[in-house]
Amino acid sequence: MREPATAETARPFARLWERVCNARIPLWTVGLLGLCGVIVTIAFGAIVAQADRHGGLGKAAVQIAGIPNTLAGVYHGMFPNRPKLVLDYVPEPGGLHYPAGQSFVDPGYVLLTEFSNARQQRVIRLMRLSDGKVLREYAPDVRAMLQGSTFRSAIVDLQRDKTQRLYFPMHPMLTNDGGLILHDTSPLTRIDACGKRQWMIDGIFHHAVERAPDGTLWAADRQPRSRRPGLGPLFGDENIVHLRADGTVLRREAIIDILDRNGLGHLWRSRPYQDDPIHLNDVQPVPGDGPYWHAGDLLLSLRNLSMVALYRPAEGRIVWHREVPWRFQHDVAVIDDHRISVFDNNWRWNWQAPEKVETDGHNRVLVYDFATDTVRDPLGDAFRKLDIRTHAQGRAMPLPGGDFLIEETERGRLFRIAPDGSVRWRYVSADPDQHRYELRWSRYLDPIADKVGIQAAVNAICE
Image (cartoon, rainbow, N blue to C red; front, side, top):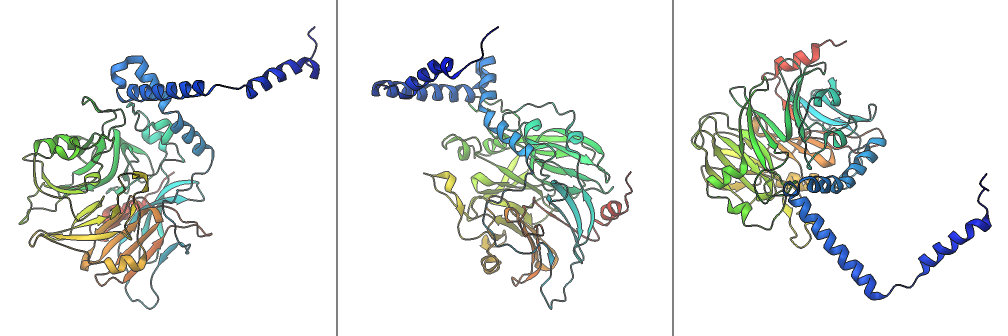
């Protein structure tokens, strides 16, 4: 029988380890190892960038490159994942707040996504704005919603990134049966009022989902892997997607093809290579014919080009576009037949240190007038006073009477602001300890236009 290890028998191993740790290594050896490391790193990056050309080696390289994200996903899956705030904030009580002495009462509703401390996951809440009462709370079964998805991508891994804890529904849309259409850089899914899946469109849908006057929907998605030559596996090759309310896809068109066809390909082709040169974040249908657009036209927000464009799908033509004065904007919306609004993140860019991009003071809602070719900042004073400065998100929805619904996404605040800059109400997403939670593109619901869906959600009885 083998004798158990003792201090004496283990001592040679200790001496060997001590020699290795204290060994003197010539400087040229260190330099050679460093050079080899640089060469291996460059070669590995080249293989990942051109994975399709390297067969099994390319696939293995992509899997290895994804290990840090996988470990991060495992970590977040083990611990409650509270939203990470990008910016600092002043703690304040959560919930809906009306200014003291104000007579205004909002007749509408809001559909918002936020973190539920009780459920330890994100939920969608249908809230009545007259009193802040939550009429329905949706806690989607993520595994059931995404079941059957088959795409594979280095951009997102559903098993790793979209667990019950990590799934963060973005810009949910209420349907007439009281259900929702939702996504989170994931397949687009429709559920009924009780959470049962009705349909799923596989793919990487992201940002806004908007309804056209004819009842069809417009959304944005990203190809799991671009098939264009010379582009890496993480390249954001994005599409506008037109679909029916039953989930039938009518049209899918690449932003790159739209830009190239309209003589604007240089805006992404002539810049230093990056994986996200365009960043489509809104596809907004116009409400009908007007002096500056036709029924069926779309307003597109292309964040990383700082461009808003008016696109006519029927002709494949960009009929108008502008790249200033907004900078890395989100959420373009129609105000009336000659004005649009743009939520301007107002970034100050540092080309030498892109990670240091920051809001230049505060966000803005810029109003562009097609009739006069002018831009105004009507809420500038209010934004400064309220210190509204979400980093890389944000919403600005025009409301009746000239009001705006403003979402400061990453700092968890929602406002209704009047034309004179006064706050009609504010909503703060926070727990009882005033820990602030992020929002996720809230949607204002009109008490008349959305009445059917609201009533169906309120009256639904689920087992």
